[in-house]
Image (tube, rainbow, N blue to C red):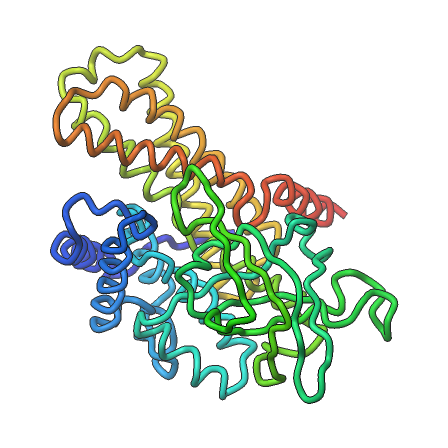
Length: 389
Protein backbone atom coordinates (compact mmCIF):
# COMPACT_ATOMS: atom_id res chain seq x y z
CA UNK A 1 0.00 0.00 0.00
CA UNK A 2 1.49 3.36 -1.01
CA UNK A 3 0.83 6.33 1.22
CA UNK A 4 1.58 10.00 0.78
CA UNK A 5 2.75 11.28 4.15
CA UNK A 6 2.87 14.87 2.99
CA UNK A 7 0.96 16.67 5.74
CA UNK A 8 -0.06 19.43 3.36
CA UNK A 9 1.18 22.97 2.72
CA UNK A 10 -0.13 24.33 6.03
CA UNK A 11 1.44 21.76 8.37
CA UNK A 12 4.68 23.64 9.06
CA UNK A 13 2.90 26.93 9.60
CA UNK A 14 0.36 25.21 11.84
CA UNK A 15 3.09 23.70 14.03
CA UNK A 16 4.65 27.12 14.52
CA UNK A 17 1.26 28.64 15.33
CA UNK A 18 0.51 25.95 17.93
CA UNK A 19 3.92 26.22 19.60
CA UNK A 20 3.58 29.98 19.82
CA UNK A 21 0.15 29.60 21.40
CA UNK A 22 1.49 27.12 23.94
CA UNK A 23 4.35 29.43 24.86
CA UNK A 24 2.12 32.50 25.08
CA UNK A 25 -1.02 31.11 26.71
CA UNK A 26 0.32 28.59 29.24
CA UNK A 27 2.39 29.15 32.38
CA UNK A 28 6.08 28.38 32.13
CA UNK A 29 6.81 24.73 32.92
CA UNK A 30 3.13 23.84 32.66
CA UNK A 31 2.83 20.30 34.15
CA UNK A 32 -0.50 19.40 32.53
CA UNK A 33 -4.05 19.58 33.85
CA UNK A 34 -3.93 16.53 36.08
CA UNK A 35 -2.35 17.83 39.27
CA UNK A 36 -3.51 18.75 42.78
CA UNK A 37 -3.47 22.43 41.84
CA UNK A 38 -6.86 23.62 40.47
CA UNK A 39 -5.00 26.39 38.63
CA UNK A 40 -3.53 23.83 36.23
CA UNK A 41 -6.97 22.56 35.20
CA UNK A 42 -8.17 26.16 34.86
CA UNK A 43 -5.18 26.92 32.61
CA UNK A 44 -6.01 23.93 30.40
CA UNK A 45 -9.65 24.97 30.15
CA UNK A 46 -8.64 28.52 29.17
CA UNK A 47 -6.26 27.14 26.57
CA UNK A 48 -9.02 25.00 25.06
CA UNK A 49 -11.22 28.06 24.68
CA UNK A 50 -8.36 29.89 22.95
CA UNK A 51 -7.93 26.97 20.55
CA UNK A 52 -11.67 26.94 19.89
CA UNK A 53 -11.77 30.67 19.22
CA UNK A 54 -9.08 30.20 16.57
CA UNK A 55 -10.79 27.11 15.05
CA UNK A 56 -7.94 24.88 16.18
CA UNK A 57 -9.60 22.66 18.78
CA UNK A 58 -11.77 20.60 16.41
CA UNK A 59 -9.83 21.43 13.30
CA UNK A 60 -10.94 18.51 11.12
CA UNK A 61 -14.56 18.38 12.26
CA UNK A 62 -17.10 19.35 9.59
CA UNK A 63 -18.07 23.01 9.73
CA UNK A 64 -21.70 22.09 10.39
CA UNK A 65 -20.63 20.60 13.73
CA UNK A 66 -18.40 23.48 14.81
CA UNK A 67 -15.14 22.45 13.16
CA UNK A 68 -13.01 24.06 10.50
CA UNK A 69 -13.37 21.32 7.87
CA UNK A 70 -9.59 20.85 7.73
CA UNK A 71 -7.82 17.66 6.69
CA UNK A 72 -7.15 14.77 9.02
CA UNK A 73 -3.45 15.52 8.54
CA UNK A 74 -3.81 18.98 10.01
CA UNK A 75 -5.68 17.45 12.95
CA UNK A 76 -2.79 15.00 13.29
CA UNK A 77 -0.40 17.95 13.58
CA UNK A 78 -2.56 19.27 16.43
CA UNK A 79 -2.49 15.90 18.17
CA UNK A 80 1.27 15.69 17.89
CA UNK A 81 1.96 19.18 19.19
CA UNK A 82 -0.51 18.82 22.05
CA UNK A 83 0.79 15.50 23.27
CA UNK A 84 4.40 16.59 22.90
CA UNK A 85 3.72 19.46 25.33
CA UNK A 86 1.90 17.75 28.23
CA UNK A 87 -1.46 17.70 26.46
CA UNK A 88 -2.49 21.27 27.38
CA UNK A 89 -6.06 20.50 26.30
CA UNK A 90 -6.32 18.36 29.43
CA UNK A 91 -9.18 15.87 29.23
CA UNK A 92 -10.70 17.73 26.28
CA UNK A 93 -8.83 15.48 23.87
CA UNK A 94 -11.39 12.72 24.53
CA UNK A 95 -14.29 14.86 23.35
CA UNK A 96 -12.36 16.04 20.32
CA UNK A 97 -10.77 12.73 19.29
CA UNK A 98 -13.61 10.27 19.70
CA UNK A 99 -16.71 11.36 21.67
CA UNK A 100 -17.63 14.04 19.15
CA UNK A 101 -16.95 11.93 16.04
CA UNK A 102 -18.92 9.03 17.51
CA UNK A 103 -21.91 11.30 18.22
CA UNK A 104 -21.66 12.61 14.65
CA UNK A 105 -21.79 9.04 13.37
CA UNK A 106 -24.40 7.51 15.68
CA UNK A 107 -26.23 10.37 17.42
CA UNK A 108 -29.65 11.78 16.68
CA UNK A 109 -29.91 15.35 15.38
CA UNK A 110 -31.02 16.41 18.86
CA UNK A 111 -28.00 14.74 20.49
CA UNK A 112 -25.70 16.37 17.96
CA UNK A 113 -27.20 19.81 18.65
CA UNK A 114 -26.91 19.30 22.39
CA UNK A 115 -23.44 17.82 22.71
CA UNK A 116 -21.27 18.85 19.76
CA UNK A 117 -21.26 22.66 20.17
CA UNK A 118 -19.96 22.54 23.78
CA UNK A 119 -17.18 20.13 22.75
CA UNK A 120 -16.21 22.33 19.80
CA UNK A 121 -16.15 25.38 22.09
CA UNK A 122 -13.89 23.66 24.64
CA UNK A 123 -16.50 24.00 27.36
CA UNK A 124 -17.19 20.41 28.40
CA UNK A 125 -15.24 17.39 29.65
CA UNK A 126 -16.32 13.80 29.04
CA UNK A 127 -15.36 10.56 30.76
CA UNK A 128 -15.73 7.00 29.51
CA UNK A 129 -17.79 4.51 31.55
CA UNK A 130 -16.54 1.20 30.18
CA UNK A 131 -14.33 -0.93 32.47
CA UNK A 132 -15.68 -2.66 35.57
CA UNK A 133 -14.08 -4.72 38.38
CA UNK A 134 -14.98 -7.95 36.51
CA UNK A 135 -14.88 -6.56 32.98
CA UNK A 136 -11.71 -4.87 31.83
CA UNK A 137 -10.13 -6.40 28.76
CA UNK A 138 -13.19 -8.67 28.56
CA UNK A 139 -15.44 -5.63 28.32
CA UNK A 140 -18.49 -7.50 27.06
CA UNK A 141 -18.75 -9.24 30.44
CA UNK A 142 -19.79 -6.00 32.15
CA UNK A 143 -22.57 -6.16 34.76
CA UNK A 144 -23.84 -2.60 35.08
CA UNK A 145 -27.49 -2.97 34.11
CA UNK A 146 -30.22 -0.68 32.84
CA UNK A 147 -33.76 -2.01 33.36
CA UNK A 148 -36.90 -0.60 31.85
CA UNK A 149 -38.92 1.56 34.21
CA UNK A 150 -41.96 3.16 32.65
CA UNK A 151 -40.88 5.36 29.77
CA UNK A 152 -37.26 5.39 30.91
CA UNK A 153 -34.50 3.29 32.44
CA UNK A 154 -32.89 2.80 35.87
CA UNK A 155 -29.15 2.10 35.82
CA UNK A 156 -27.32 0.35 38.66
CA UNK A 157 -23.73 -0.81 38.82
CA UNK A 158 -20.10 0.23 39.07
CA UNK A 159 -17.36 1.37 36.72
CA UNK A 160 -13.65 1.49 37.53
CA UNK A 161 -10.46 3.05 36.15
CA UNK A 162 -12.64 5.92 34.86
CA UNK A 163 -10.27 8.73 33.91
CA UNK A 164 -11.37 12.34 34.58
CA UNK A 165 -14.62 11.35 36.32
CA UNK A 166 -13.96 13.94 39.04
CA UNK A 167 -13.89 16.77 36.51
CA UNK A 168 -16.25 15.52 33.80
CA UNK A 169 -19.69 16.92 33.07
CA UNK A 170 -20.80 13.96 30.91
CA UNK A 171 -20.19 10.20 30.77
CA UNK A 172 -20.18 7.97 27.70
CA UNK A 173 -21.66 4.98 29.52
CA UNK A 174 -21.85 1.37 28.31
CA UNK A 175 -24.33 -0.87 30.15
CA UNK A 176 -26.23 -4.09 29.66
CA UNK A 177 -29.88 -3.68 28.72
CA UNK A 178 -30.74 -7.30 27.88
CA UNK A 179 -29.26 -10.30 29.66
CA UNK A 180 -27.80 -13.24 27.77
CA UNK A 181 -30.52 -15.77 27.09
CA UNK A 182 -33.30 -13.21 26.98
CA UNK A 183 -34.97 -12.56 23.64
CA UNK A 184 -32.55 -12.76 20.73
CA UNK A 185 -29.45 -12.13 22.88
CA UNK A 186 -27.27 -15.23 22.74
CA UNK A 187 -23.75 -13.72 23.02
CA UNK A 188 -22.25 -11.36 25.59
CA UNK A 189 -21.47 -8.80 22.89
CA UNK A 190 -25.21 -8.47 22.31
CA UNK A 191 -27.64 -6.68 24.61
CA UNK A 192 -25.31 -3.75 25.36
CA UNK A 193 -26.33 -0.10 25.02
CA UNK A 194 -24.55 3.27 25.20
CA UNK A 195 -26.13 6.07 27.24
CA UNK A 196 -24.99 9.71 27.39
CA UNK A 197 -25.47 10.70 31.04
CA UNK A 198 -24.77 13.88 33.06
CA UNK A 199 -22.20 13.44 35.83
CA UNK A 200 -23.90 15.91 38.17
CA UNK A 201 -26.85 13.57 38.76
CA UNK A 202 -27.09 12.76 42.51
CA UNK A 203 -27.48 9.06 41.63
CA UNK A 204 -23.81 9.04 40.55
CA UNK A 205 -20.97 8.77 43.09
CA UNK A 206 -17.30 9.20 42.13
CA UNK A 207 -14.45 7.93 44.31
CA UNK A 208 -10.89 8.82 43.28
CA UNK A 209 -8.29 6.04 43.20
CA UNK A 210 -4.72 6.75 44.24
CA UNK A 211 -2.19 6.25 41.46
CA UNK A 212 1.40 7.15 40.76
CA UNK A 213 0.17 9.07 37.70
CA UNK A 214 -1.39 11.67 39.99
CA UNK A 215 -4.96 12.82 40.62
CA UNK A 216 -7.92 12.63 38.23
CA UNK A 217 -6.52 9.75 36.19
CA UNK A 218 -8.36 6.84 37.83
CA UNK A 219 -11.69 6.70 39.64
CA UNK A 220 -14.50 4.41 40.68
CA UNK A 221 -17.99 5.46 39.60
CA UNK A 222 -21.16 4.08 41.18
CA UNK A 223 -24.67 4.28 39.71
CA UNK A 224 -27.53 3.92 42.19
CA UNK A 225 -30.89 3.99 40.40
CA UNK A 226 -29.73 6.52 37.84
CA UNK A 227 -32.78 7.46 35.80
CA UNK A 228 -32.27 8.01 32.07
CA UNK A 229 -34.59 8.20 29.07
CA UNK A 230 -34.66 6.91 25.52
CA UNK A 231 -33.36 10.32 24.45
CA UNK A 232 -30.09 9.47 26.26
CA UNK A 233 -29.54 6.29 24.21
CA UNK A 234 -26.80 6.61 21.59
CA UNK A 235 -27.62 4.50 18.56
CA UNK A 236 -29.96 1.55 19.00
CA UNK A 237 -30.87 -0.24 22.23
CA UNK A 238 -28.89 -3.51 22.55
CA UNK A 239 -26.59 -2.51 19.65
CA UNK A 240 -23.88 -0.74 21.65
CA UNK A 241 -21.08 -3.18 20.84
CA UNK A 242 -20.74 -1.90 17.29
CA UNK A 243 -20.33 1.62 18.70
CA UNK A 244 -17.62 0.34 21.05
CA UNK A 245 -15.69 -0.91 18.04
CA UNK A 246 -15.81 2.56 16.49
CA UNK A 247 -14.74 4.13 19.79
CA UNK A 248 -11.69 1.88 20.06
CA UNK A 249 -10.59 2.64 16.51
CA UNK A 250 -10.73 6.40 17.15
CA UNK A 251 -9.30 6.20 20.67
CA UNK A 252 -6.26 4.05 19.96
CA UNK A 253 -4.89 6.33 17.26
CA UNK A 254 -6.09 9.62 18.74
CA UNK A 255 -3.16 10.09 21.13
CA UNK A 256 0.19 10.79 19.44
CA UNK A 257 2.30 9.25 22.20
CA UNK A 258 5.35 9.10 19.97
CA UNK A 259 5.45 12.91 19.84
CA UNK A 260 6.32 13.32 23.52
CA UNK A 261 8.86 10.50 23.35
CA UNK A 262 10.53 12.16 20.37
CA UNK A 263 10.64 15.62 21.98
CA UNK A 264 12.18 14.32 25.23
CA UNK A 265 14.71 12.17 23.38
CA UNK A 266 15.72 15.01 21.05
CA UNK A 267 16.20 17.39 23.99
CA UNK A 268 18.56 15.08 25.89
CA UNK A 269 21.93 16.13 24.37
CA UNK A 270 21.13 19.82 24.85
CA UNK A 271 20.07 19.33 28.49
CA UNK A 272 23.11 17.23 29.40
CA UNK A 273 25.53 19.65 27.69
CA UNK A 274 29.10 18.39 28.08
CA UNK A 275 27.96 15.36 30.09
CA UNK A 276 26.38 13.89 26.97
CA UNK A 277 29.74 12.78 25.60
CA UNK A 278 30.48 10.92 28.84
CA UNK A 279 27.42 8.67 28.61
CA UNK A 280 28.15 4.96 28.09
CA UNK A 281 27.99 3.89 24.47
CA UNK A 282 25.29 1.36 25.37
CA UNK A 283 22.99 4.16 26.60
CA UNK A 284 23.50 6.37 23.53
CA UNK A 285 22.94 3.34 21.28
CA UNK A 286 19.59 2.72 22.97
CA UNK A 287 18.81 6.44 22.63
CA UNK A 288 19.38 6.22 18.86
CA UNK A 289 17.26 3.08 18.69
CA UNK A 290 14.40 4.85 20.46
CA UNK A 291 14.53 7.74 18.00
CA UNK A 292 14.24 5.20 15.20
CA UNK A 293 11.29 3.58 16.95
CA UNK A 294 9.66 7.01 17.23
CA UNK A 295 9.78 7.31 13.47
CA UNK A 296 8.36 3.81 13.09
CA UNK A 297 5.46 4.58 15.43
CA UNK A 298 4.81 7.87 13.66
CA UNK A 299 4.59 6.16 10.25
CA UNK A 300 2.31 3.46 11.64
CA UNK A 301 0.08 6.17 13.09
CA UNK A 302 -0.06 7.94 9.73
CA UNK A 303 -1.08 4.71 8.04
CA UNK A 304 -3.95 4.24 10.52
CA UNK A 305 -5.02 7.88 10.10
CA UNK A 306 -5.15 7.36 6.34
CA UNK A 307 -7.14 4.14 6.64
CA UNK A 308 -9.50 5.72 9.14
CA UNK A 309 -10.14 8.68 6.86
CA UNK A 310 -11.02 6.34 4.00
CA UNK A 311 -13.29 4.20 6.20
CA UNK A 312 -11.17 1.09 5.64
CA UNK A 313 -9.60 0.68 9.08
CA UNK A 314 -9.74 -2.77 10.68
CA UNK A 315 -9.11 -3.76 14.33
CA UNK A 316 -5.75 -5.26 13.43
CA UNK A 317 -4.49 -1.96 11.98
CA UNK A 318 -5.14 0.00 15.17
CA UNK A 319 -3.87 -2.88 17.32
CA UNK A 320 -0.50 -3.00 15.54
CA UNK A 321 0.02 0.72 16.07
CA UNK A 322 -1.09 0.47 19.70
CA UNK A 323 1.44 -2.30 20.42
CA UNK A 324 4.28 -0.38 18.77
CA UNK A 325 3.59 2.92 20.52
CA UNK A 326 3.14 1.28 23.93
CA UNK A 327 6.49 -0.45 23.64
CA UNK A 328 8.01 2.86 22.54
CA UNK A 329 6.48 4.63 25.54
CA UNK A 330 7.93 2.16 28.01
CA UNK A 331 11.30 1.48 26.45
CA UNK A 332 12.02 5.16 25.80
CA UNK A 333 11.01 5.98 29.38
CA UNK A 334 13.65 3.59 30.72
CA UNK A 335 16.38 5.10 28.54
CA UNK A 336 15.31 8.65 29.41
CA UNK A 337 15.39 7.91 33.14
CA UNK A 338 19.00 6.76 32.85
CA UNK A 339 19.93 9.84 30.79
CA UNK A 340 18.11 12.29 33.10
CA UNK A 341 19.97 10.89 36.10
CA UNK A 342 23.21 12.21 34.57
CA UNK A 343 21.88 15.71 33.88
CA UNK A 344 23.59 18.68 35.60
CA UNK A 345 22.02 20.56 38.48
CA UNK A 346 20.57 23.42 36.44
CA UNK A 347 16.98 24.78 36.36
CA UNK A 348 16.54 23.45 32.83
CA UNK A 349 17.77 19.99 33.83
CA UNK A 350 15.55 19.93 36.91
CA UNK A 351 12.47 20.58 34.78
CA UNK A 352 13.64 17.99 32.27
CA UNK A 353 13.94 15.37 35.02
CA UNK A 354 10.42 16.20 36.13
CA UNK A 355 9.13 15.77 32.59
CA UNK A 356 10.94 12.46 32.18
CA UNK A 357 9.62 11.14 35.50
CA UNK A 358 6.09 12.10 34.48
CA UNK A 359 6.58 10.31 31.18
CA UNK A 360 7.89 7.21 32.98
CA UNK A 361 4.94 7.08 35.39
CA UNK A 362 2.43 7.45 32.59
CA UNK A 363 4.15 4.83 30.45
CA UNK A 364 3.65 2.16 33.11
CA UNK A 365 -0.13 2.44 32.67
CA UNK A 366 0.12 2.26 28.88
CA UNK A 367 0.06 -1.54 29.07
CA UNK A 368 -3.61 -1.54 30.05
CA UNK A 369 -5.04 1.82 28.96
CA UNK A 370 -7.36 1.85 25.91
CA UNK A 371 -7.34 -1.95 25.90
CA UNK A 372 -4.57 -4.14 27.29
CA UNK A 373 -1.57 -5.09 25.18
CA UNK A 374 -2.60 -8.74 25.49
CA UNK A 375 -5.92 -7.92 23.83
CA UNK A 376 -4.15 -5.91 21.11
CA UNK A 377 -1.95 -8.90 20.36
CA UNK A 378 -5.02 -11.13 20.11
CA UNK A 379 -6.69 -8.68 17.72
CA UNK A 380 -3.55 -8.44 15.58
CA UNK A 381 -3.07 -12.22 15.55
CA UNK A 382 -6.66 -12.76 14.42
CA UNK A 383 -6.22 -10.21 11.65
CA UNK A 384 -3.00 -11.84 10.42
CA UNK A 385 -4.54 -15.31 10.49
CA UNK A 386 -7.60 -14.09 8.60
CA UNK A 387 -5.42 -12.40 5.98
CA UNK A 388 -3.52 -15.65 5.40
CA UNK A 389 -6.62 -17.70 4.64
